[in-house]
Structures are given as C-alpha cells and as structure tokens.
Image 1: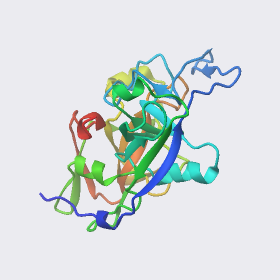
Image 2: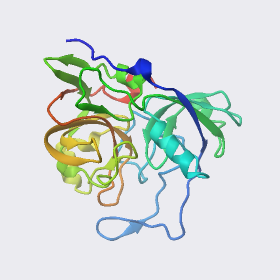
Image 3: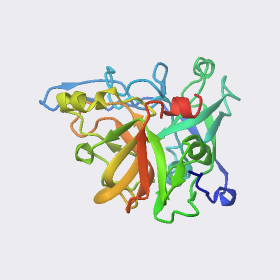
Image 4: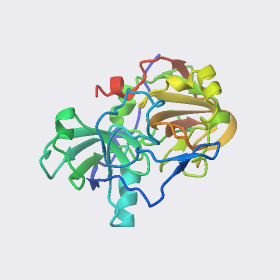
Length: 285
C-alpha cells in the first residue's frame, strides 16, 4: 500500500472572520416529537461548555446539540457564505477579541453555523460576540490519481490525519461506523459543500439494533450507495465518507448530522471499521 498524492501545494490559504453566536429561540419554539407532543430543548448556536468531539451523539437532553463554539457572520450574505464554503474540517481558528484573545482552536463541523473546538481554558473567558478568525485551506483539494473521487470540506491536516492509503486502484479509509443509506433524512436536497445531512433516527429500536445509538460526535462514517458529488443521492456502488457533526433530534428525519468528506461513484473507496476513527483522536483535540 502507498499514500495517495494531492494537489495541496497549489491550495490557497485565506482568512475569514466571524463572531461567537448566541442561542436564538423564537417565541413558542416547541420541537415536535414523532407522536405529536412537543418540548423546548437547547442545542444550537452559542458556546456549549460540556459537549466535545468524542462525546456521544445520542442521549443528550437537547436537540441538534453542537460540540464547541458556533460562529457566524450574520450581517452580510456574502461573508456568511464565504465562511461556509471556504472552511474545511481541521482548519485552525484563533480568537482575536475579548478575554480569550489569542486562544487557538480547530474547525470540527459545519451546521447552520461553523463549529470550532477550543481548550477548556478558552471557554472559561469566551463570550458571545467575540471575534474568531479562521485560516481556511482545503477548498479545491484533489487527489492526483483519483479524478473520480471528490474531496469535500477536507483540510490537508485532516486528510493526512485520516491515514488514507491506496492499493490496486482503490482508496482505503478507516471509519468508526457504517450507516445504511435508507436511514438518511433531511439535507439530501442541499449541496455537499454546504451544511450536513441528518439521520432518520426516530426508530430507537432500529438504532440500537444497528449500533447507531453508539455514534459519537466527530466519528468518521461510511455510507454505501451514497453519491455526494452534487447534492446527496442514491447510486448503486457509490461510497461516501462523512463526519458526525451534531447530536440527535426528537424531530423526525433530523437525527445526528453527517457532513460529507469524500465521495466516489465507481468503487474507488473502500473502508475498514475502526472505533478510533474520531476527530478527537485524529486531530488530538
């Protein structure tokens, strides 16, 4: 086996800037369970003190729980979309204002906002409104000898950390878990460079039977017959490698969120199950 080569020396590295968000709840914001009852739960935006990559994706008293710090630039559509489209998982971020100025973190997800994980010492003094600068690199990353494989949201740092090898014309990736495509839900309509796709996790017995209820935030995931080149669709023989970036939901079709990292249509990707395939280990968080 050998390591695949990339065009990473040709990539452009750029700074994008955002602020730490604050949770936003609309009046009467009840979240519906599949049986029609409803609840109010925390989960999205702001600073989440006690949830990190490596922690469980199921079982929180929350909805769409995000690890770390949620950042965005809501004031301008162009800046908001630059933040989303230029960011890649594994990019470095730095706090540039407030009491946590100088603290450095790592981009660990993209949901409605960009998710960044910092050390605990930064969370102690960080506040909504603090400005975060991300040194983005990875958009345009490609494999020299695998033109049929698309890399999505993949920084060079994460690509090397994954330890991907090639043999007999195929790429080999370690993943923590395989998901059946039949349980993929909301987000199929979105392009795979922007935001995630959620699981249909309402059938708790099925989740337990398949072992999916053991999923962790930051797990690297494989999905067979999933083509994520342009949006997310079914294609026999395709394989997509993804990342769990947010926690479960009580809403039908909005379970843990899965962000695309790699996709191939014609069998170029193979994978092996390895429980250690999680961002917390891969990026030494």
